[in-house]
Image 1 (cartoon, rainbow, N blue to C red):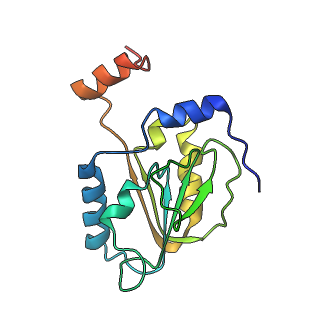
Image 2 (image 1 turned 30 degrees about the vertical axis):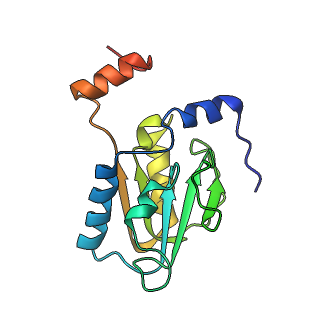
Length: 157
């Protein structure tokens, strides 16, 4: 399946610079440990530059045997040896199979999308039965978030 990424989508995706704060990655890694989520395949939706991967052991003798990143943009920091799927996260079709993952994560991604309900349904479909889905979103009501949204012209005040 070929994915068509427009210049507008590319520019929008790059606004985040492909990274979240390390505290977010550490929190998710701790949650995965608490839920004993190990083995199998982790799919990182809205993966950016792959920052979460640094906080997880991947490969032999590791928490996950495979790691796949999905995003509109493949950042230069994404490792060549790690699977990447280019996808418009607002599209109805993703180049992935239902039940493809043991764990699906979407960190600070959902708030950028047109239809968060459809996005959640797609995340749930990616997870195998009994799999784990973790979604984070910034606190849009914090002063820092509001100031950031105002600065980038996305605040609805």
